[in-house]
Image (cartoon, rainbow, N blue to C red):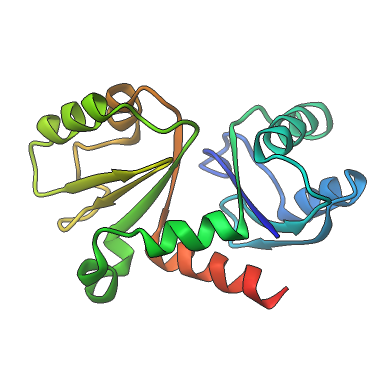
Amino acid sequence: MYVALLRAVNLGSHNQVRMDDLRDLCTRLELAEARTLLQSGNLVFRAASRSTAALERTLEAELKKSLDVETDLFVRTAKEWDELVAANPFPAEAQRDPGHLVALVLKDAPEPANVKALQAAVKGPELIRAVGRTAYVVYPAGIGTSRLTNAVIEKKLGTRSTGRNWNTVLKLQALMAES
């Protein structure tokens, strides 16, 4: 099983993707048992053993060609997703307030110096840690008012990302476990 996260889709009128169109695209690509979660570009599917990087390239190209949507995709295996959940450095926050804990799935693992630079740039109550190709951010005062935006995070870490709150992370894990 794989999970694929689309970056910045269905936000206002930008990069509109209907989830049934996304599932149909998977069928055309011979990705089996494609299921979506919410309307924010969360996809779970089964595929013959392929690298996550190859799946990302294929899905990105097909999204652009078939649906005229140009965006980054972040693909992880079920095992990698389980590791992402297990590596969460903020278990108390995950229990207490999962809606304010965000897992940022990264294209590349950031350099330790970049993580330190990001942590030093935090001016509010947010907490951030990075483990491999995932950054975990706690937004105790909420995400909408925070100055720790995705643009700031990407600039400091030097890599692209897409985030999901902890509730969604766990729902995606459960969806893969069902299949």
